Image (cartoon, rainbow, N blue to C red; front, side, top):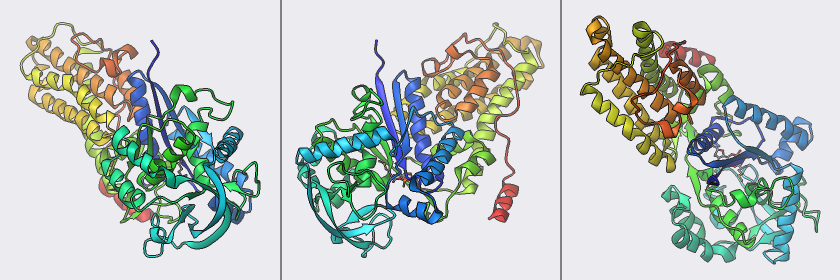
Amino acid sequence: MKKKTFYITTPIYYPSDKLHIGHSYCTVATDVMARYKRMRGFDVMFLTGTDEHGLKIEQKAAAAGVTPQEYVDKVVSGIKELWQLMNISNDRFIRTTDDYHIESIQKIFKTLYDKGEIYKGSYKGKYCTPCESFWTETQLVDGKCPDCGREVQDAEEEAYFFRLSKYADRLMHYYYEENPTFIEPESRLNEMVNNFIKPGLEDLCVSRTSFTWGIPVTFDPKHIVYVWVDALSNYITALGYGNEKYHDFEKYWPADVHFVGKEITRFHTIIWPAMLMALDLPLPKKVFGHGWLLLEGGKMSKSKGNVVDPVILCERYGVDAIRYFLLREFPFGSDGVFSNEALINRINSDLANDLGNLVSRTLSMAEQYFGQIIPQDRRFESPDEQLIAMLDEVRENYASLMETFTFQSALAEIFKVIARANKYIDETTPWVLGKNPAESDRLAAVIYNLCETIRICASLLAPFMPNTCVKIFSQLGCLEYEHGYDKAIYYANTSYCIHKKENLFPRIDAKKELALLAAEE
Ligand code: ME8
């Protein structure tokens, strides 16, 4: 039987500077979802990449005294290294400067022009350079860019326009009739409708002549394609739409979900679907606008400089700790405040104390009392029932939360089981049982139940903390066919071959660490 497909994407990031922890947040969430779906047996296509054209990059390169291509090549190689460091399992990485993408964009632009969806006119408006966005007077907030609050400039140029205005009704129909879960969280739908569609959509200026770092319009080469038309199309060009580089457009399109930050939901839920309608292509099934990581009251941003470097964080605390923290601390749809204190607390309480201790106590006792193999002669008693019932339920609870991208709660479900298992150790007092040879069968059952708990929890945690879970399975001596989603329920006869190694997460001395961090600032 052919596997079901799952196509998931991150935004393609601007390589105008190094990425910060906010970009990592979205990419890690996408990675977790991709790994989860692979674990569920899907044929996954996970796409990320970089959005390399536009005035901002042209200016940055000029300031650095290099060509735009040289500039982006350097930043992009750093971005690829970052994703490798963070264990990101993307199947493809698209750069908008790749030849095949450029070829596709030129074809898309020409097709839209030939169909009358794009026409030539002249543009007068306000332009926000950092956001690469044109605004009308009415869209400005206090005369400034409504997305970032910065100054905008007057701009006028001969330009091509996309007939966005004519799609308002079809968009509304898509949102409310055809696909009511297209925009999530739901609050973002209301925002799109009330702030953008209801006030009236205007045709969109889709070409520029004021700078050159972009994809030329083939039939009028002094124009370059507007960077958002170029960028949004990546989701189909990366599958081979309009080019011969790839051949899986039919297989994966439409995307199951685009993960994007809330500030670019508008581009993905208005402009992008309208472009696809104009091309007579199916629309993505869902756009999820996640929240922002804030820092001391403001959004992190490359241009503000108040950024948190993911490379430093991963080196200091470990990749899995950072991946876990990002998805456990912040509800995916809302904003959250990043702080070192919260990070250290999470590592200590959840990873070192709860998970780390459960694994280390269980495996130490297993080795101490039985060596590598838990005896088959096991006596189960009623205190086991509650733990086993939780083990049998956790997988379903987790799955339904994962399907709605409720990562924080999915993790909380697993950690409830971990907490219960730690309590079970205190209740069953294996160290007392271990002193009495007559209780050996009871001790074997207790240790076995704990190993089952660890195996099941690690199976479900694997998309979040892949390296840690590999370590756990290896210490449990648990073969590959014994873990994974399908096996994440209680069995009476899993075979373990225990081999305890170093603790998974060393405890951080929070006071010392925070003082150290303060001194470094
Ligand atoms: O907008 N908190 O690229 P970009 C959470 N090239 N997420 C954050 C964040 C923060 N503080 N800062 C950034 C672009 N992000 C376009 C996209 S897509 C066709 C083109 C994440 O480099 C979040 O996902 O500015 C946001 O939408 C994305 O990075 C913006 O990255």
